[in-house]
Length: 113
Length: 114
Image (tube, rainbow over all chains, first blue to last red; front, side, top):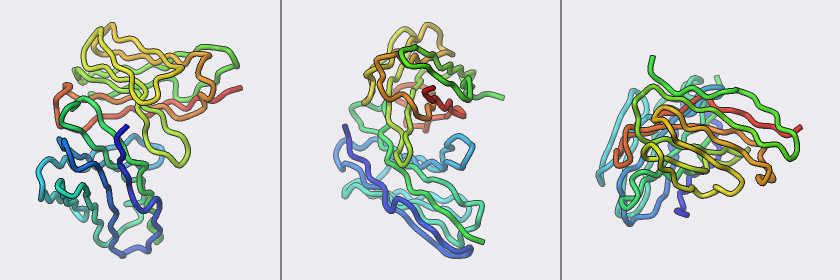
């Protein structure tokens, strides 16, 4: 079983704060990394697909970076809003079995108004 | 609208009983997945299927069974051999096995033991 770790496990911030969290994964046989947002009572939705070392993706106030050589990805949220409250999951895909994703345990973000 | 439908939303199982969770997709995706989530944990892969009439065990397959007779359907049976079945179950799909595209998820089924 591949080891995908996310930190911190949970995070409480005030509205307007910027925040970031980490996904660590094996640095060998990298194929892709996905970030998902999972809001309460909804299904997980994809945020970013990251495939190349050095990738930087942005969607509004949320951005992500990727370092495949050292095996980590950062997710940044600028100026957090209450609607950003969710669990953020990363999923790692290995080159030799692209059909399977290994998920981290997620980071749960709570943004207080 | 295209998507994944899981049913039922809530399911209760008696001790020693098998139950089947339904997952249907109209996205024309080849690959389908079943995950289990326990409190405070991430998604753990139970079974996955990359094509009709084929499926593979995931990381926690013991006590579960699946079938993939049709492209759009991937039901999961929780057997009496699964000693701790209380959990949230998510079904997902993606276009094909080698796609680097993300998975699409259903809304989940919450299974509890009576």
